[in-house]
Figure 1 (cartoon, helix red, strand yellow):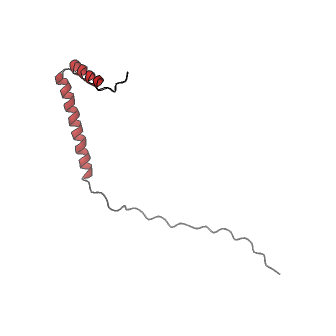
Figure 2 (spheres, one colour):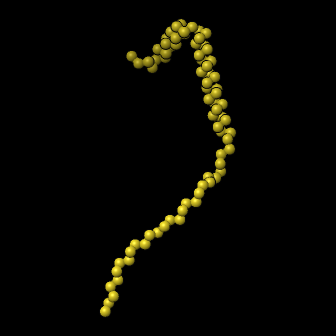
Figure 3 (spheres, helix red, strand yellow):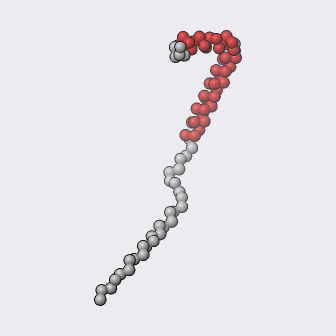
Length: 77
């Protein structure tokens, strides 16, 4: 029932070639191959870029500490 068998895929490929014609099918495969080559070329160009060795940014502001109100001291008499 499932489409996992190699015979199902071969039969599907044969029907596709018969319906689309050999020339059209090979043209589509050529376009797919060109797309894969362009993708690989684009990925290789990304690797050639110089990566920064240090991240520059603004210094963090100094944290402000708020003092809690001191409890009232009782003086001893």
